[in-house]
Amino acid sequence: MVPKQLHVNLFEMNCVSHIVHGLWVHPENNRHRFNDLDYWTELAQLLEYGTFDGVFLADVIGTYDRFRDGPETALREGMQIPSNDPLLVIPAMAAVTRNLGFGATFSTTYEPPFAFARRMSTLDHLTKGRVGWNIVTSYLPNAARNFGHETEVVHDHRYEIADEYLDVLYKLWEGSWDDDAVIQDRERRVYTDPSKVRYIDHVGEHFKVAGPHLCQPSRQRTPVLFQATGSPAGIEFAGRHAEVVFTGGADTAAVRANIQAMRQKAVAHERDPAGLKFIVMAGVIVGRTDEEVSQKLDSYRRLMSVEASLAHAQSAVDLTAYPCDVLISDLISRQVKGWQSLQRYNPASTVGAVLAQFSGFNQERFFVAGTPSVVADEIEKWLDVDGIDGINLRQYLSFETARDFIELVIPELRRRGRFRERYNDGETLRERLFGAGQARLPADHFGARYRDPAALGQPALPLRFAAITV
Image 1 (tube, rainbow, N blue to C red):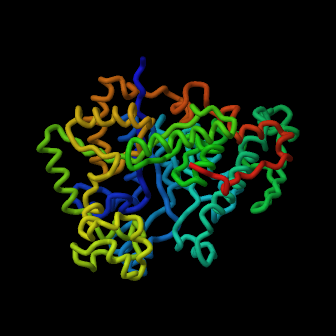
Image 2 (image 1 turned 180 degrees about the vertical axis):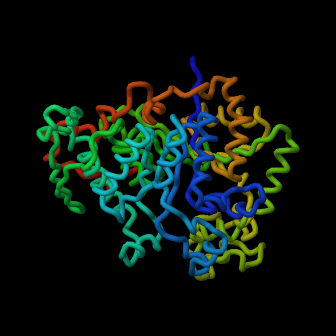
Image 3 (image 1 turned 90 degrees about the vertical axis):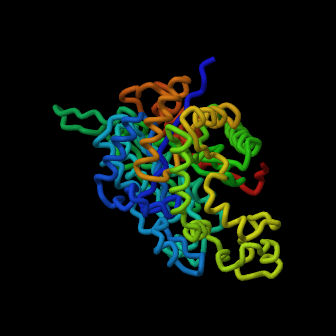
């Protein structure tokens, strides 16, 4: 039996401090260069050399301002602010690579679908089919205020909006233009056959879009659809739309349960459950010797910022203001300001224990530190026991994290048959994930229905989030 091979993206964000906070001050870190185009082109070339699947670009459209009642901590720590648009660095990275894929995060809640459809089709053209979209609905209160709302749109309602958003996009990407609409007939001076391009005339609860799509068909038409989720509404949404799900779980049983729930939802939406891949965020610290690994761990821990981590967690309680021996249950019973946010923690834990969790990143579920053989052993467990398909590699230092993985882990995985030897030159991102010849959405995917022009006028059944059980 051929062993399952690992898919690997580098987890990135167009900012100073993305996930592991405080390490931007490390003398060997390049995070301060994120505004420079050279940072992104150098990174892309490194990842292409390492035959990574791609770079996965996170994003937020607001700042984290709940901790200490303001954005000051996030600003001081560079914690996802300042941050730049993730879509704009993709063409530069594509220009210096031939095969590296790109996944970009974009929210369905606050910006209209027509303009976004054009941006993604443009990127799919410029990358020759190497682009994917990480579908998010946005969760920061500040993001809502930035787009004219008093507060966040209710969680499940965001997914209702997203469902119609996707419906509009499929009509534009899959249905507005026929495959053979562009004929480029110089003699007759006809670039596009007008009879093969159509309005979509979408009229729904949230959007009214006439079309036609402004872009001619790209290689993938619809970019690879990523989604990060674990909520009941998100799982229902993933069953209809997602191709690659960014998920997780506290233990093997929870991870496998999440995967099984989403596969069952795919079946309920008349899809092949094998049409979903699952990735997790993973921390990998690797060295040639145990001593080297220990030195890296120690250097990272010394620079970790607990305050920035609390800000990232949107903690309404400043735990650093309390003695370490105070119990979380005591703070809850006293109903200190913001006490509701403490309910995510074990009430029997002390403040010191919770703060140690933030500083001790090695306590996370998908984390391994060790020599290449130790790391490869753990990754094989993730693949075979947890049932995942790939990882978004969390960065500690740029570019050390990626370089270490390329130089030390990938050769060991290749010896075990767990990682590709080379790219299949010219393949799309979807083909890399699902196989040769699968550049477009599979026929059983919800969005494929709009390849039939007659389907453009048929209303799609909305998802019924209230009925979700997991």
